[in-house]
Length: 288
Image (cartoon, rainbow, N blue to C red; front, side):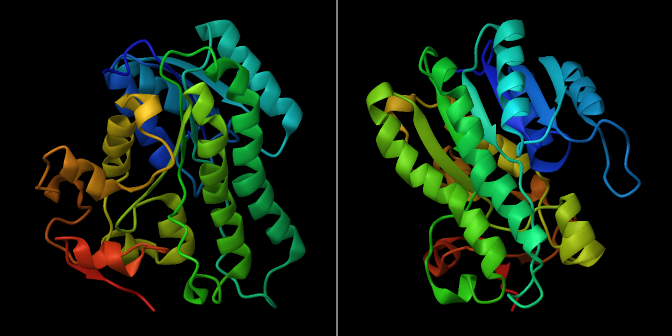
């Protein structure tokens, strides 16, 4: 099954993993609505929704750049309606937009708590709700949340309760909506990377160039997403996928093309269950 002719609505699609998924879908001939906040270039954040649209078109797809904020119900509803008007519906929703602050309880300002929960958990719920009327009419509808497996050990919460609860809110949407929407044939899954991914968050907030060089490129997430989104929706729902595992099932064994620095040691991402890390053939550094 190809993504050709499918319409994707992707949040946070200006850069990083969201943009990589958009470009990967475009290579199949997909139509992509790129929903993001960045309308003008930022000195520390590459790209705008318009440059992302250019990349989608260059890859062979159709693009609809839409400036907006996932925190605004009015803007989300208008963006989804515009997508349906231009492209005739929505086949796939990718909830990629996310906010991060790795601060402890005392150091977390409430405005930062609000931002993370409004973007991550609330934004995922809102966009899913807004797209439902169109997904119900699609022949192979998917919702894909860029969120981690629900590993409820305290070690994932203690260093940054606010961020973890906001990010796990996205995964709880996967857990609940997969069961709720199964009767309608709408797949709801999560996808998470085995390793850290070279994104603006990694470079600007987490570990700078050093961590980026120990990461993989966003294209590994895009290739894994394409595999998931091609699968029959009624037979593929309620999963918490790991990017490398998805691609290994497809027969891929060489992942060197995704390394930012070929041959460099790779760092395991947050929220990665021990069983997943230990089962992987990829050697990983565990921080902390």
